[in-house]
Length: 118
Image 1 (cartoon, rainbow, N blue to C red):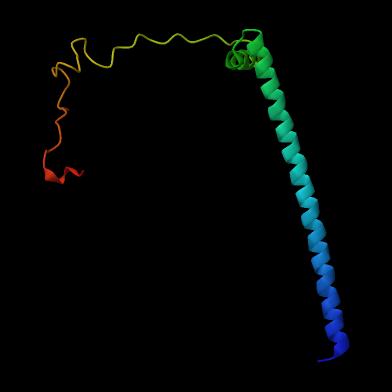
Image 2: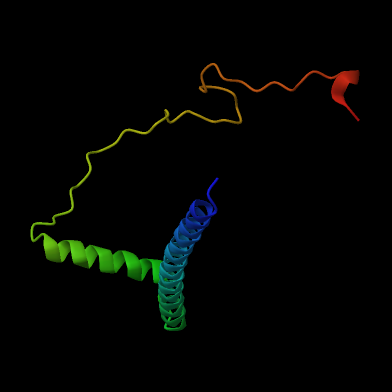
């Protein structure tokens, strides 16, 4: 092998490694910046929640109200729909303790025997 070919190949390899390392450093910097922004946003939300709790309001309720206001501002015909009368899921005579009217499901205790462990 020619020594100057080997030297050129090693220099090219070192330059490629340097380029890749700089690219990786730039990506890491962008990631750190994004993480910092996310943490700042979380901190702001916690502060807002704490302040609303100090005022005696529910933070979740405020969040839902603000979303509803945004939706009602976007659509002027936001009329809540009334649900039709629903029938109950079970008949009125259902009692899980009596065992009547419950259908075919029934609970039975497990077998008693020496293989129960212990």
